[in-house]
Amino acid sequence: MEESKDLSEEINKKIEDIQLKVLSGEISLLDFELVPIFENIKNTLSISNINKSSMAFKNGFRLLVQKFEELKILINSLDKRDSFLHYLKSNPDDSEIYQLFNDCWVKPFSIESLSLNFLNYSNEKLSKERGIPITIDHLDIIKVKQNFLLEVPKLKFTEKIMNFYNIIKNKFPCSFDEIFENEQDQVEIYEKFVYLLHLLQLNKIKYEKNTNTLYI
Amino acid sequence: MNEFTILVHILSKKTDNFEIGATKEEIIKILNYQGKNESVYIQNLIIHLSNYLEPLGLQIRFNPLSSRWYIAFEMATSDLIYANPFEGKPRLAATLFCVLICCLKNTGIGKIHDIEKLRKKKRVIDDLKELRNRGYIDIDDKLGQVRLTPLIGYQLDLNKLLIKLTLKLNKQR
Image 1 (cartoon, rainbow over the protein chains, first blue to last red):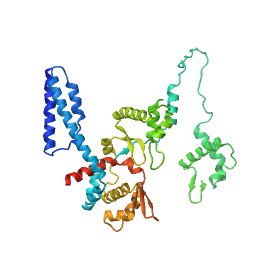
Image 2 (tube, rainbow over the protein chains, first blue to last red; image 1 turned 60 degrees about the horizontal axis):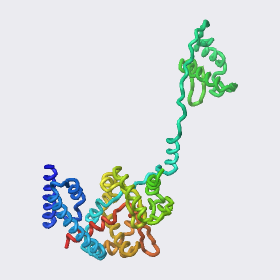
Image 3 (cartoon, one colour; image 1 turned 90 degrees about the vertical axis):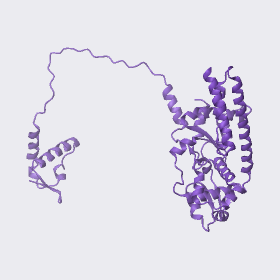
Image 4 (tube, chains in turn brown, orange; image 1 turned 120 degrees about the horizontal axis):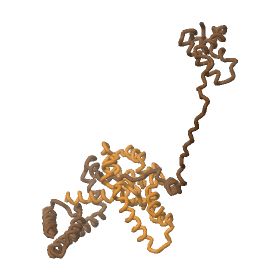
């Protein structure tokens, strides 16, 4: 309660300071927010400090009336549009006018993706009733007598390459196209092309880029 | 979904290059309000929505040039995230100021000749073209006049500008 009493005194002192600053022309009431003062008075009000709080309220209200008066004068002067022309006749430089725009810019809030369709879609998705969660049934492990082995190719990779080489070696010199001209199956063409690349790397076959020719 | 969901949508919706938000009549129509005292209803809705948006750094504003309500970032946030569109170009800002004075004095339309006189420059057409390219004005070459688009009403707090100017003039006296 003692604390509240001190606060109401503080508010009174603050109001006095503001009045002094306004009278000295240091601040304008139009630039000053009075709402927090009234909020503070409301928050610190108690039976014990009712007199001081009433005084604070009375002084605060006096400031508010004064602010209204200033606002009235301002609104009246706003009507005098000629005064703006008068300002321009005082030859303000461009940078002075530029400064006038400061703090007056507003950034509109516009998000294209924030559409009603999207909100509807999200609403439908989020409010959809979920089914019973899927349960995973583990398979029974059964012992079997047979052995499972991975399928192993009949020939080694190098043997496959050499078989391919023996088939095509009589065609050289020739182009890539001629090597595969009789092939229809894309998988086989790919497989044989891989062999060809290996043969080129092993220098069993050579390639002349300018004439697009393979030779031994 | 409630009124606020729809309001957020329509007040942040860009209808074309220069228009954002909705007029009072459009809000009433979209919300299908059929009761009495529609102005009070709209005012209450906007106040309540504004209270919800405030912690997000947003506020509801009114564009006096197009009579539309729209959502904007609050001024302090706007200052942080939105640089002055005329940064480094005080010449353009000064020309825009003269355009504003001319147009607001003559119900939205200003003569190019009057703007030149206010600017005390023989040629302002290049500045005007740049302002047009930025979407702030339309130029009628035949009639030699310019018209403000609603865009400047969204991006510039005209009331605040006029109050600042009046306070400046009062100080000068």
